[in-house]
Length: 264
Ligand SMILES: [Fe+2]
Ligand SMILES: [Fe+2]
Image (cartoon, rainbow, N blue to C red):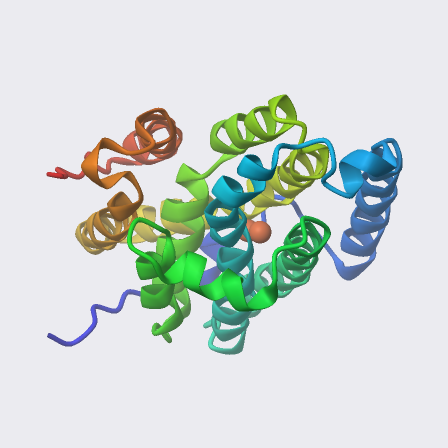
């Protein structure tokens, strides 16, 4: 089946909700970096060296670290594709700023792996095993159409893995003594919120321009959530999955999308 394509015939319908220019983006990132470095500097050295967590925590968290790192790494690739193929400049600009954000996130997550002393040869196998986000991101990495990439990865996946999900991850890491992961998640979410909001503006513009676009977006949502559902297969991570869907439907249902039936 040929991939479905939709496009915004009138690009003026889309405006970057964050209203960023290069100047503003750089200033925002400078403030963000200062805040991040101050938060990280407040972490005691033993905690930064992963000496305050149990060895069992690191063993069990390796998959979670992989589920953080590889999606960020994937994002630097698929958002670069979305920027390269962007049908109009305002959208390309949003993609390029996001690309810089995702590069920063991936470096934060690499830092976690390294400080926790997990050898690099173990990272990818942890992500490629069943029950991870791997299937979804490998799918997105095969796409070439900017709008399809942004709907699936930013609107659906980031929309779902939004503020609530990252708060759960941050609190969980903090409770187990993993203060660096907690600081990273809280920093990451401030950017992801912006990635979600421009994708939502794009989806809204597509639906307002042509109601038929809703059907295509619905199919992209269904496909994405079913690939993501692998993470919760067999009743794993129930609480996480409920929060994940809840975050997403909060932004999707008001735009006229319906829930995706998923059978485990
Ligand atoms: Fe990210
Ligand atoms: Fe993002």
